[in-house]
Image (tube, rainbow, N blue to C red):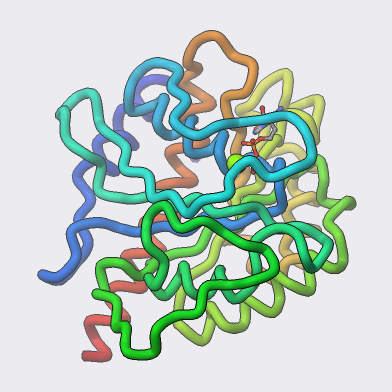
Length: 268
Ligand SMILES: Nc1nc2c(ncn2[C@@H]2O[C@H](COP(=O)(O)OP(=O)(O)O)[C@@H](O)[C@H]2O)c(=O)[nH]1
Ligand SMILES: [Mg+2]
């Protein structure tokens, strides 16, 4: 049974603000966001920020058009209005992936970012990836604990084969690092008119179910790791049901990150 509305939103917010990674070394979950440009990475970050600020907030630049605006590695810490403190996770935004090899984030840079080798503010160069210093052993706290692929639900059939090849290549390496991976399927409103009318139909719409299965096959990630969301994009105020959908996806992602911590701790 799925719950919607204000009480569920508050329950999810409480659960998220009280999360803490297991073990002594870590104080927060570090989540790396990847995706084709315009998939809604920056919008997702702003939506999460808005929910915890209780007002529309726009930390990352969202832009129309085809070129990636995000050119720097940026780790965002979001503040919780209720407690005044930072939330227990960091969302890392990177340059978008593009079809052409000389454009968009270089696959090697994705791996460097996941390993914690990239400094905040690092400027991406699509033709020349970061050359990590082999002696550099970044602290575990700088490493990513979960990867989010942001995929636009209305563009599933437009996912470029070359981008999918890049994703498969990095996916294998990220899996070798033991990192859990999820897909945030954004723009469910544009993909399905029924959902646009009533967001609560997102889990019951047959069309959405098919899209989730299609996404699972295309990206090679199990259906249980594909989380549908809608970001704020043209709204003028917050909406409880939209917030529930976003917070559910975020909480699920943080649970997967927590599982990763448990694996790392056990392997010690
Ligand atoms: N309808 C709708 N539009 C969205 C959603 N998420 C993002 N957008 C729009 O998609 C465009 C690209 O979003 P952006 O966050 O800049 O994508 P990025 O390149 O991945 O960072 C912008 O025009 C957003 O307003 C969504 O869930 N629904
Ligand atoms: Mg962006």
